[in-house]
Length: 484
Ligand code: GBH
Image (cartoon, rainbow, N blue to C red; front, side, top):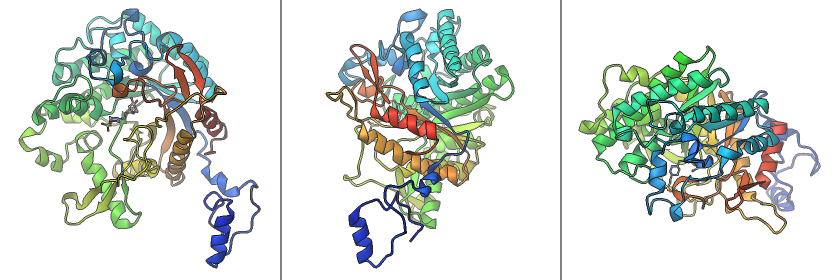
């Protein structure tokens, strides 16, 4: 009994009474005093705390400094595609206000910041002539971060494909253009930036854009063509890994930010734990499994049959390029049970309607997804290092009469997820850092400005940034390197 900490067994008289009634004896402690068990939520020393953003979601300045349009400019300007026709034209105007945003980061005390580069600021046509004003912009942002003692982690591609590239990701030439852009950018910034991610979330710029049509460019291609788009996506990643290595100093760290489908065992017993691991490998066959194994799993190829992607010689070696780290963007869990009768030996269990969720309905609250996300990937593929490259939530944030934003639900969400991430770190999984999504409210794709994910509130009329209660909370977590 004295192994049960006060954190779990709160300070409530009801608990005490219930325990007494059941004949259990309580540990000897005085309520409200510092709890030695809380020290167990301390993170390893050197753990990197950060925030994440993406270019199209925060920058605005869509036509400034010679930037070319991306597929998301085109898509968001197409009537009916985003909430109330919202676009990233202005967003948070971080293009002009980046110094202020670096101050927000500095004030939080983060060691690291994950941002992305807009490909069409560097190459307005996607390829060909680079744009000096675009290069200069990112150079200034990087210098501002370094001067604030914040280490930049840069994603080369967070969905904003240059609109000028014919056929977008349907065209294999786009893969080559991406590798060239990766080579150019990392050669240019690699003296100061030591951590790179090739791409963000394969499914979002391949399937959602080309198979299901919900994201840019809004196409609904047949399976064979959509599978080829997937192949181009992971090939672009692989060639970019090689391009980055060839153009940066030794020691540069290269990875990916992937929203793998995360599976938790319905009950933490051996058969369900094994089932969740098998599900992780097979349900991510088309992306994460293939880039980490350098080969499409046989089950995937069999399942797709004649629609399977066509690889050219050398493709699979490039796709399987060794990574220095795997980044996972995790928001919500899937649950799996063992089922010997099902293919793969598992069944995905749908959540009941009563399952709790956050302001965005897709963010089901299952904090153990952070633990199982890390554990399953590590047990399957043993990456050298892992990061949580995104985790966070929308909340129906409102300015209170006193000018504050009391986002207690965001704090609840983050606290529980960080507790589960701590569990992974404490068990020795090589998780090196955590990036909260997001530094500030921003353009939330289809949801436009209607969903707020920031630690800072943005008034979209004045562009004023106000720290939410969660910013104060996160600052304390970082300062103490402990879940508070
Ligand atoms: C991440 O995507 C992105 O990397 C980031 O840019 C984004 O702002 C952040 O998460 C928060 O959304 O409405 O049921 O059809 C997360 C992956 C894929 C999750 C699309 C929401 C739509 C679900 N997203 N999905 S639904």
